[in-house]
Length: 600
Image (cartoon, rainbow, N blue to C red; front, side, top):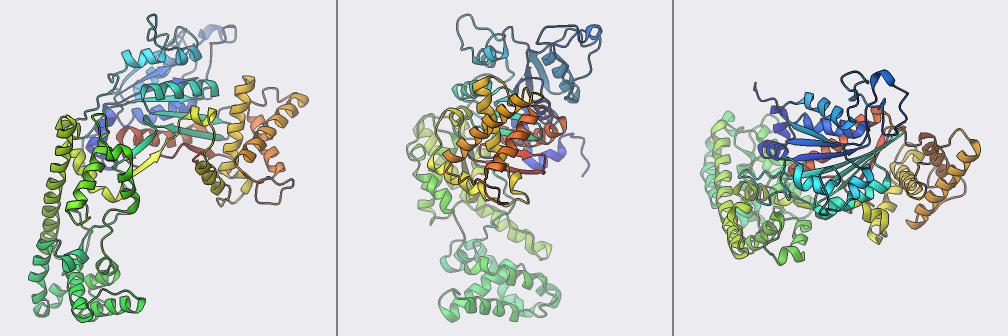
């Protein structure tokens, strides 16, 4: 269908509420003139981000005096397509102002701005708020005073369920500045995305505002249809569906071929369950019984080869003789969390809804609110519409019951009903089988803290992820990047800064190899002395160290483009609260074109 809405296509991905959340949000890009940050920002500006601010201390040189300035903050970011070459229009302007202007040209509806700190970038990030702090001297003060989203962002969403947020983005910052920015994000309870390109390697690190991402709308690739045929026939749990089936079954024998081949398979399977139970007294359990169940359905067709509805019934037979999934065990495990069992006025929407779901299940035979959707199936229009209406009406009844429990919980907590609007309750109820919590360790805890045994086990599994060339496994390069960051933390520079000097180059390679070896040993990974083609070995470690020293933190826009696309998707997930974010770190290896997610 034609549309004048320029956001029409993306609305099909994240809906009106997701688009509204995007329009209510503000991104703060703390940058060092890197390409990946501008690529990420571009991927938020084009879909309609509410506002953004670019923070950078760099200055464009006077176009007539390029190469003459000695000021170290003068930059010409040659690796970034979004920075125009120096000209009269950019003379003596800050890099932040130039990139803000460029981004605003992409989408005039977005409110873009810039800040050139009056102090160094590291000071600007780290400065705590004091009586003398200003938005030009402290990132924390800037966020509290100057973004388009009031800080702290409102806990009460719009009626659509949309909520605005302030998203922090760190672009190619030094590891020390990344640690400082991570601490600021945690102190302000704001989400953070850290991106870095390093030669042919790119990394994207996400950090949630609360230590975890609570996902109530993951939009899974595979849908579990909740048709409840088994419960309808055996337990009378869905009277409206049973009445509809009972009205259709007696007419089957008198139908002509056209009518017979357009009876929805839901009707055929409910009839099959009832017939089977009448003969056997129990549902099919063995392979032989299940095959017999399918054969019984097939035998009732007039011409199985031509009747697609009977073919669908045979294919979906398991959905009838098996009970509906209901609430998966991994979701039920969330009920045992302390923040779900013991609600307070500060509880998140997610925890309040989980608590309400637990109560709902106790009074509804352990079955969640019906989703109300049915799959495509061979049917005449009238039958399909009638069936869809039955499911929708039952879904509305279940949702009303669930909503009453949610409102009761909100009243007990002294919270307004608007804190969990009807749109959010409906979204939660429709996605019960897919609810998830994704833990998110802060970057500074990763750098400064110890690795848990659970993290070690997860990382050990990644050592053996199958890749065509083991030496290009993302896990190995992630260890290399962590080692390079540790190198920078101790020396103030990336390994390989003196790459042309053979002696100093060897010294850096030796040191980086040793740091990588330490990481592997800390994670319990066996390191062989010789390269045997698989498994971690000292020759593989040294080869990676040599390549990282050769890169020396160099940036290439093509790698930045790939990573900016990935990071942009992660940013949209965080802002909209939809889909499932990565767990901690995504690494792209541009040498071999492979990628992986590192959970440590």
